[in-house]
Amino acid sequence: MAVFNYKALGTGGAVVTGELTAGDRGEALRQLDKKGLQPVKVAEAKVVAKEAKPDKVSRQRNPQPKAKPSGIVKPSAKASAKDKDTKDHPEGPLKMKSKEVVYFTEELSDMLAAGLQLEPALRAMEDREEEGNIKEISQRIRNLVRDGTSFSNALKRVSPSFGPLYCSLAAAGEASGALDTILRRQAHYLKTLQELRGRVTLALIYPGFLVCAGIGVSVIFVTKLIPQLTGLLKGSPGSEMPIGVQVMIGASDFIRQWWLVGLLLFIAVAIFFKAWKDADQNKPAWDRIKLKLPLYGNVIRGRFYVQFLETMANLVANGLPLLRSLELTRDAAQNIHLKASMDGMIEMVGDGRSLSSAMVRSEIFPPLLIDMVSVGEQTGKIDLALRRAAERYDKELDAALQKVMAMVMPAVLLLMAGLVGTMAYAMITAIFQTINNLGGA
Image 1 (tube, rainbow, N blue to C red):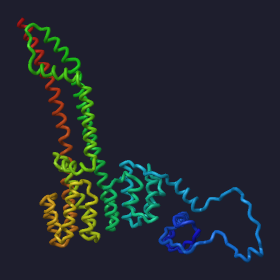
Image 2 (image 1 turned 135 degrees about the horizontal axis):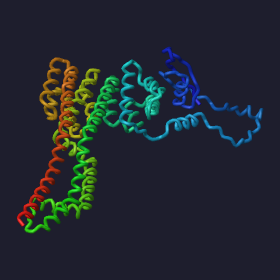
Image 3 (image 1 turned 60 degrees about the vertical axis):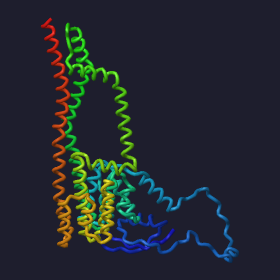
Image 4 (image 1 turned 180 degrees about the vertical axis):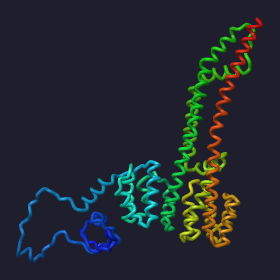
């Protein structure tokens, strides 16, 4: 056991000092927690002996009888505290739903913006009747932060649902002192993603029904109508199958004979592709390919520009050096190809070049964005320039997303109309040819 001197804040904000006895520092912190005190400083003062040992002379003069073992071993306070901690916080990370991550981020950012420190804010979230795993997540993070772990590392250890981007931005917020601002922007970003997923789901419901209907019609054509049409044409005197009908019959025979092989081949290709793109050595190549995809590549670039500008604006505005801000912003980037380009930018800025010239040499930023950053460097208000550029490209990103969504439904409609229309035209042509043959006979 040891004696700890502590300095803590009471419920009314008054400073309370004193000492307490505990097995270790963690147990001392838990005792203060039970008393409703917010620890400011806890330091070990001295070690208390478990049992006073009499000197040799005293033992000779006053011999004590040996205590008989009772067979009962009393657990130590340290072991009890450890067992309690293990019981209250089972091992293993907790998974959270996307809406729980958004709710956690919004509530924590609001409390930090209101002036609360990180640990009291987490305590307030822990005391509320939160839905799902938010209460347990808040408790685990608060315990880790209280024991000296950084907030970003605590997020990584507690739940994989936060993701590397979230943890990197949290680290940037801790370094800059703008954790509330970055969390608020991250909550906005996560809500935007949720709304986008919802819009995509709603927009794909009708095309999904069309695709299912088109597949059903194709199956009926291949298995029922085309074989009947083939028998009708062969039974007509002097009949000659049109080219379109011959192609449809050949495709029907091929599908009925090889559909299982085609399905297995498709599954094998899908598994191979997933294994290829998930391999560490192939991730840079896959990220480069994603940037070149039509429409989708522009969305990825736009998201990177907005994230780069917003993160840099927050870090620079809170007093971080430009080089350190670039390093934290690079760590928050998700695309490996773009992150590698930022490595070159960091080297150039470290050698004394301006941010705008480094952005030009990286060849990943559009000229308009570079011009806006250059103006900020010339006026000495680079944080304001970065923030204005972030707002501009955020609007452009939203427009790009709306464009992608607007093109999904027409593309599906054209595809289904072409498939069903081709089959219908070929069958109607074959029917008219049969009628003409019967009339000529």
